[in-house]
Length: 320
Image (cartoon, rainbow, N blue to C red; front, side, top):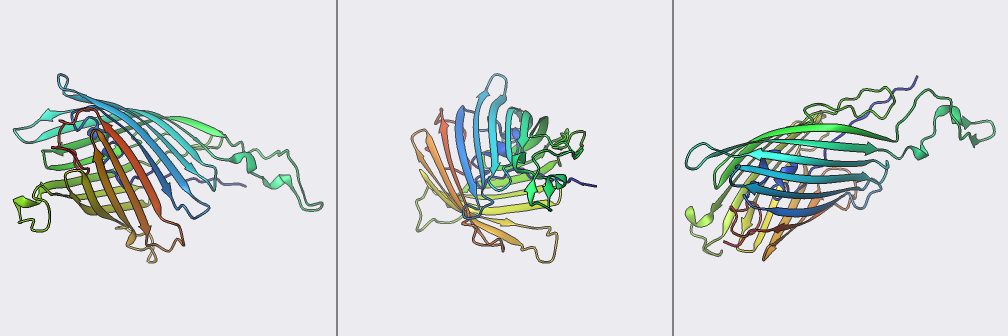
């Protein structure tokens, strides 16, 4: 008897505050302008289980409809297993003004996903002939493995914010699509929960920035994520100058599954730079867990914002 069990974990970006749509569709059109961007993430670059993720998006905002609309594309690849995950989504968020300062934004995301593994190298038990040490290319095993599966994926989110503070929550994979790669199999994709919050303020409003430019801002951010047994809490801060930002986040494991699980899994350094309408983000994750000499994780992003007079861009440098 052969049992097949699989697990799936959504890709996570270190610079989630620069592309918050990856966490919550309610952020679609949040800056009340049109923008587009591409991001690349390489994880564990020195190991043979290297993971690469590419993300691209386009979003815009309609003042008349008080709505943000966007599309995004995700490609996630693992070198060791040959796993490949591609998904295209359409996002929508509606902005409701609660009072003079506060807004409420519900959002929804509908996408089409496709996953595959490198089963071309899979060898089943009845193919192995120990006597003459050969591999039979034909198997009569009743297990029928699909090379690729396609599925519909639905996610939703809520967001409350003013000009300086935001807090939101989202649930991905609400319909729990079947991601089994076995014919007639049924493996519902685990829902992905997240809670994201942040606060951005002028340092001069609280203290005298003696050694910093007077217009320097600070961002405080936290992002909690949970999917099945996996959980993670990112907390951090950044200094935001006129065209430059520098910051650090800490990736924590707040609910370890064993006594050997480390509380701190990585320390993540990031910087951002703006030149006219372009924003560039770069980050490096220094792994602190006992995974070996992984080489860390690198992330590079490029955003083009069509309107420089848009709402303040939290987490990245802007021209004001």
